[in-house]
Length: 316
Length: 305
Image (cartoon, rainbow over all chains, first blue to last red; front, side):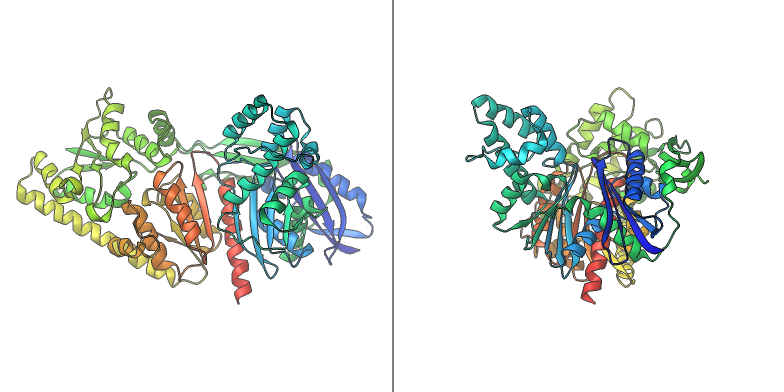
């Protein structure tokens, strides 16, 4: 049996998974929608990953999770390592693109920039409270314009005269957008304007004060939008690399980190058939009323978190 | 008499002075409890939405003192003369409180400190003490005892930072208004998280304020606000002894929105993490950012070695 490592990236919008070998070659990969059910989506990912490899040849000796539901899914699949998405993405991308200097990333609800020197992440920034200019912003504007967000990039490329749109704030962007539609601007110009606004908003917020050096890799869901890619290329005057596996960088990084952790824990594909339930408990020990999440596997408590202090500890 | 002191805003700068001063005058002081969810909720209900999170918490703390004291001490501290101004919200606190609590029976004890209008702190406190029935000598003695306690506290904080800087490991300067740094709902969880990540948090208020204000001019020639100057000074004084800076802002702080932008642009050799906090529950976003920030510093150090 050869050793393999599993990585899952559970984002707000999509869930991604890979299995890699000891040389970090990708053996299997899956990408599907989270649909508000991180545990269900992860089970599906695990099932599909299992169907892509020969289980008599490979045995998964360590699993890693990342993304906003990393803790929950990490408990579910007995992960060796649970890592934040910035570190996971940096590790994944620098493994596939060892010469990369800047990683731009725009996901469903957050955006970040990672600066790399000699294959190692040395600086980063992430959006603060505000989610303007992320994937969910583009999706809601697409709906307003009656266009599929997947079509956005192609339509934007058809524009010769992008309409300037104020996209610093989603609320202002919407009223500006409605105004421009009513003034008679063409749909493709408005869509191209939105793509430019997303790129410029990103560079002025997340990218502020950072040296954006080539090679530049652009990833996250929004990197599938050619309009935004072109806007970045125009603004920065540099080639923008979009890897076809860009969406897998987080889970790929998580798998590499699981390998690198040196912690081997039994992983069973049977978790896909087990029942996982979460229950929210309000701690009544003080006025803070912490919301504690308890995770049960087939009725047995396996983990809990959310308490601010020791008084709220719930043990299995 | 029982004098209530809200554990918020300038309490974290002058609290020790206030407690010593009133106790020396023969009064009992009552401190509101550490921030909890009830205090936060109450503060948000009482406050207009435009106030920053820290000011909302202040009103929650005042409300927590209802029925627990004869007077609640809410001074108006406008500026420190040449040392700079405080946030204009602080000037409005006594009036906002009087208005907010007028139907509750909570009595507000005021003091007006405004050196720009020729009312230095000492004169204001002596006047307050005599209003409370003290003689000039008693007032003078209480003021001096308060100042001595305050200076002692500053010295303790500076000593603590000197010891922390000698520690092994990743050192992170946590830069924020002291009322954010030490609040149970704003800074305390962040400082705890940094410790849990095996890094050493160093608080920005462990500096000699006078020295810090003068050092701040090396980063920016003129900043109007006292605390902003001291925060800049702390960065200038510690920048070569630390591995990273975490800026904590309580949304929507006016001075921070300008000063933190400038810090990010002008301090380029140290990684900086800018955390903007509102009253959202749950620390997932904060933990993600802190964890990755410390990871990045670790990677950077490994490359350097």
